[in-house]
Image (cartoon, rainbow, N blue to C red; front, side, top):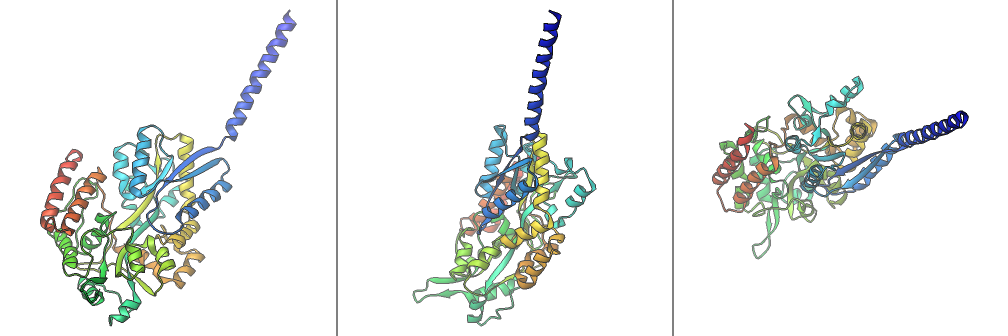
Length: 432
């Protein structure tokens, strides 16, 4: 009897040990799922490069399974990410606008990267990014976003059309006065008086506030404070910048009304616009599709030079498991290493996010062969943070609505900015 009991106990123990051992083995082997949302805001084979990064990372890290999910535009991606966060199933990581930082903090959606930087190597990596990109990535002494697909706005011009207009094709306008003069000479009309080619085109859909910063910054105006709690839409220098934009349209050298962000490169390809403002993230797209020689230059200045930074950062969602968050940190660190940051810059046109990337042999040679790729980087010392506040979507909408009201002529620039200021003050009252 005692022997039978001993054997039964031994068998049960062995069974339990076996089950536990098998469970432990299975757990050890199960990969960490890393769901990764990303947006696409420019032309070119972005998804192919992203998929290649995911495959390369998984080869080196077989314990992590990365699933890249194209989530639409930046605006669509933030909506999907926050909806998923509120339903309890957010992505583990996502690339979202750097300007979404305050909103994501307000929603208690993300964890700071500082929580995962444990080694001197980790901390050196976090200190390796251009300071201009960290202005929209840090607040309150913490780093909430890691720069990835970052940019500045640059100016593209058609050198053939410059020659036809009697302008030096290798000399871009550097001031507002030179820009207006060149745009006047570049504008063409047909026999009926219809404009067939505009001298200058600045898009005002998609990211109107961002393109507006290419005018407010050179006019020495900053739209928001660093804490994201106060805006200055009714600053006389801001109104003056908007008046300049409106006056380009009134002069007939800029398209009237709201100009589409998405079709602006196409208008450039089709010679409907001789000069355009758009992101350096469109550089590879324009290089591949422009059937003419073109130039890339810094944004023309007025009281000073300057352009806003822009683009997307990596964020880590705090409702993920600790293992998933560690995996997301590892993935962001891997993707932004100098060699891959250089590859991403060459394949897209985005600014490589660190000086070390520009010192890689591949990007160094690319910059020597194609100097236009360095313009956005060289503009960083005079660049300012992209406009961002708490409750960013609503405050930005107030500004965008005001800009479009002025550009379509339903309000004067002064009235449009004063109304936008009142609405922003009302929204931001809760954060002061």
